[in-house]
Length: 491
Image 1 (tube, rainbow, N blue to C red):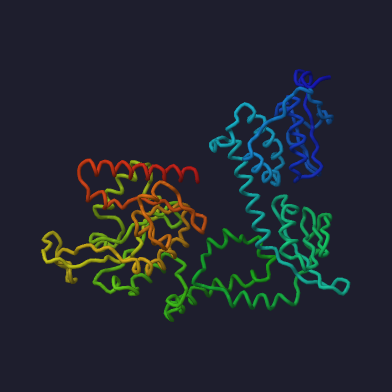
Image 2: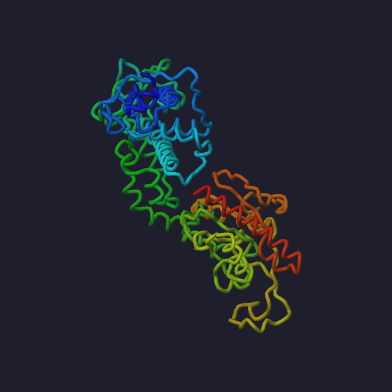
């Protein structure tokens, strides 16, 4: 009976996978089924020790023979890259999902680029979970020394959520090449003798040691380097969930260290530790610190620091040059004419300012007092506020001095995109002066994985008139539209 006859008669096939994480095996089977024109709903995939991928439990286990003239399925490199990661997921439906996408790609070659498609989203979610599990194993696995035939031998216990053990084998053999070790997990085990890596059967927690004499020294070291000024409990739990703590000797210290962190941070601040190299770890701490900062001449003027504001984990950080006269009076960034114009253009581009974090490269208003009285601004007893205060551009040195606080904000907010409004803001991020005209419209990758986009400051538009202003406003809109599109892609 030919493959086509199988399909017409409603036949289906059970494809047994010999290993749960073997992409090459799945690819060979999937290619064969696709060339035999077997649709996804007529295939059930199984893995060792697991149930069938769907309700077909009594299907034909003889795989069909494709016609000799049948063309092989074609997919993009992008699909291959994601599929190699998805295959490691613990979800038993992953084989069916990948085959369904493979099947659909034959009629929709660009399907893999459709982030709104349910199957593509499911693949992306699975790949993200696998990558996270790979990282957790590398970060939180701990070896303990045992006695073994007179040699130093180390054993580690880890409970991966997905089939990542063999994938991570190369990392551990390279990282601990000179050690003799075993990694035990409920999904299998690895054993390294310095030359050869062997795979073993699944293990239990009882097979692994509970501790060794070195752990006391390790805990003492961890406690000594613990920095309460950088403690962010929510971020820590997100990065290192509690389920990993039981296998990490230093994690036993965390509850007590957290309990004393607030008092220790206050002591560090009062002792001037942050002035000697420790950046604030919270936005509130940055706010307090910049109000006491007088590292440059701007901070010595009669003004007040203006802290950034917005969503504390916003995907977009908007950075201007410095607060102006109105911002200094109200203590908020971008509330003057330039800020109001920025709001208009952000709304036009589809960017919600309320979902962003807005700040400035320099935290104090730099000005000189003019001789012309400003009758619209009442004198509230602060020097210069009864007269018009004339804006002055900060110097490169002043911008570089204030980078300390900007980098603290970036490290806390961790935006995916930083939008620099003007050359001063761009310098604050990059540490060097660049041409806004040359840099605008093109993302600049940053060391922390985020991107810098550069455009003009809205105050520049306010200084223009007529056709020049209209042209620059059009370019400004185009820059913001590109940023909005990039944020949608990253989301």
